[in-house]
Image (cartoon, rainbow, N blue to C red; front, side, top):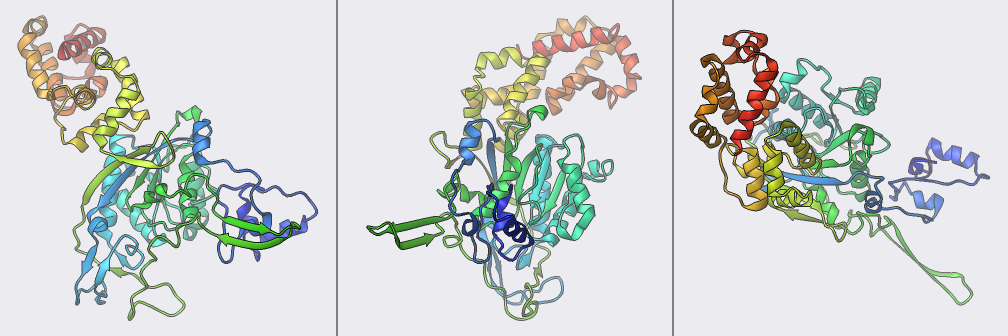
Length: 502
């Protein structure tokens, strides 16, 4: 029985009846998420596991995808949100004065501004990596998942106009419609949906081999829930070049990595003493593998309007709050164990570049050549390093990507793209003079594009030649003819790239 906790843990469930019906058979249960709560106990039915296989071991053996963690901290989560007496919510209800934190947001008090700033940040992250990397966003509840879907839809308006199912919500309220979106998401051959927002529905039993981003946007107190959610990204897919995934954490849930129960330690610990005749004399039962006793309990719901006996408390909806991203951190696996260590992103990048054996000489020689540059970029991105993102984090957006990589890894001096472009114009005037005035203008405009946006402009030459200022020279074909054909234009651009990095 795969996912055996579904059938065995709930004594009153319909699955238990099936297991009971076949009680004379040998039953072997398999699960990644054994449950043990007051009303659901996998161990009670099956007993202690006869074999365990940890996440760490699975990664080392190549069966599961390793991961990097990207921790992002909204300011209201970092410092809390203090509500003074007399503050009213969207519906005119007074919000109980208190200091509200991550565990309260979207459960007791809803901050749409927080959801929108996270949606914007996640969108910018995908723009720096790949906007079609499949992503699951875990929200607090179904309403929060809807708010997040709307916010992401708005933040990606350029794509959602073309791909109407780019972002979808999959929750129980969506019924068969949501199930259809999930099926499309799970299919590696289907481009959309790219992003799914959910609350509880996708925590377990969902096989999405091409899911590259797992986004945590709700507080998680249960180790079982945490392991289930992380498991959505651990599937390896060699066919689709998916060998690792990223956990993007907006709520500090990845603190659970530091708990010794995370990597394969048993969720339940039973200690039994026997007497001289082998009879059980003393049994101690504990749940050392969970964090329910060590993490703060959720705040009790506020008294007064908005709370009804027997129902979940209604949220207070607070508008007109400014929220911004207060900090970003990158995490990686400690090579000596399963505990993660925090590193500055630049240090993280430094270590990854060196681990890939990308020496300064190798970077300098390979970068001017488009094919070798693409290979280097793919190697870097496979380790979670994107030069555009690195430039953003280090506040060196004007630096050339090669110079930034050399600076981070080998402490080389930083040079801006515009400085490189000006040096090329000054030192290689003879190169430009070999072309007609119109062709020289084309090359100078391409160099200006590089100074503004980076070396990637040369890699997208046909598309770049269709936009301003090149459109004033006519069609792409007419521009090619200024150089004597497309091949000669490409040769000129290749030569210019080599000069650029001399």
